[in-house]
Image (cartoon, rainbow, N blue to C red; front, side):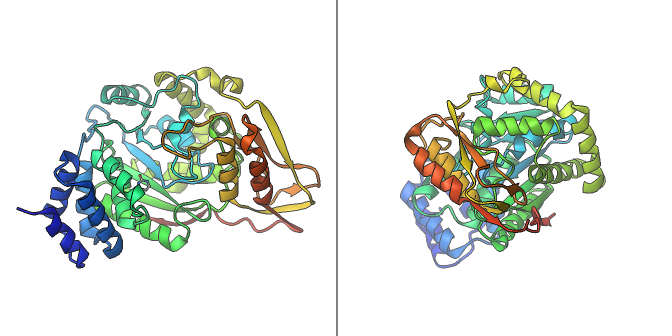
Length: 435
Ligand code: URA
């Protein structure tokens, strides 16, 4: 019999764990026969020693099978999802899911809540009055059959090993470990019933991965797992130094997503969204290459079909579809505070982290898991890099309910912008891909 201390010792001493050791550990994590302190010791050994590609694949598979693995044989359309490693103003999923479904894909999307300074898709969706993200398996299947999209949160039965291990990682300083992140993300994606996956691996000031090299290593790890599990996986490495789009905050991002579905999305947001959705179409066999997929997606957007799909998704999940035509049906802040520019010039840089922290000061994110979030507040009308601003013109607007954090939010928002005499070269949004 394999004892937990044998598994820990092997990893501690730099050895490679085989499939049996990893499956034994994960079984023990879920049935409680392995204590949290033993898992914590093993997680730290993994953090320090790393994992081979084979170990990471075994861990992913064991975690994926630690609970319910959804299969969707009744769905005939190609089932393709997208996952983002998280950023500031990242509302891509709200545009991409209806767009991909309107183009013929099925999008089973199990998402998370905000983590650290990044917003979560579930929290954004919950800004829509009535929108239910707690779908049991039959509601999840029904949504997929009726609209081609399910936007859901994790249930108790879904990858329980990740829930337990993530909580332990959080309190033992073992979150920032590429093989553990790969297994955590991929186990959840592979359990949701997909044929293929597109990954948006973000890097820069506003992302968890600060450098392109780290983002590439994370992307390569996840693509390798997808390949090992026979789910074609395609990763884009995208810039996250600046906020994506012009809005950060839940209602504000829902509005920007709807505006984008109406054909009025900001360039950077649309570039990333179309690039990711195009690769979903290629993996789903609906287009031969990303270029022709993007042409098709622009037609779908212009036809209004993606907007109507979003309306149907909202209605299917219990939300108020009237928000599409009347933004005042979303939670709105009591007051809007403009941040005027103190100089004239061109916006040359916007620090995503400062904008995110301004939003946190206003109540747009949780400080602790049990905290409520204010869906109405955040930062909007964010000037884009390259835009000219005169003295006194707003750089952005704060949407405020509670005055307590306002002073700090104003200082953060103001200091997020750097102005110069000339418009800068537009830095590329997509800096690499791994397929
Ligand atoms: N997101 C996840 O789901 N898991 C991680 O480990 C990190 C980010």
